[in-house]
Image (cartoon, rainbow, N blue to C red):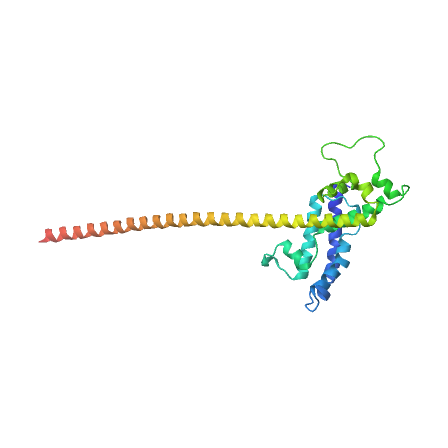
Length: 258
């Protein structure tokens, strides 16, 4: 799946999920009598299922994941009644709604589907497609387009799993489910901690920049006040000299008349 196709798929699913979300705006999301947990349950059943329909076979790049995550967070903020003026971070929104990020949901669906495919019989078409290789030719260099199998291996490495053990670890369904759940929870905790650390670093940087700007403004104000004082002194001295010259001229005129 090429990059342009991935972007088109993300745009299409966001539009469909947005339509489903908008139809419930007046009846559910705007109702203050409905608790937040019920709203989140309906969101997961209606909107999130529409957004991630068929995501098990998607080959997503970072730009597509960011687009889906933006839609996910925008919907959660709308449900929770949090505006952008409130300056509430995404990690706090996820904690308040009791839901994980969109990437953790994608990984859960993908790992579950991969487990089903691996446990299939060897004569099944999905298993042939997943483990299939090119009979002739070779893939291009310089960052070739990824396949579903490559995406699964990369995601397993990100979650701390060994891709070499995929064919054997997924045979036990209960063990594979437990392993994937613990790995994805660890991945989500690490992601949230990284976002909080990054936000704290941005806040420290903003504070340092603000202190630097305050110091420069104070220096500029002192410099401007000094210049204004000098200009006032020059004007006062000029006026005094003008009055002195005029008084001196009047005194000479009186002396001549006498």
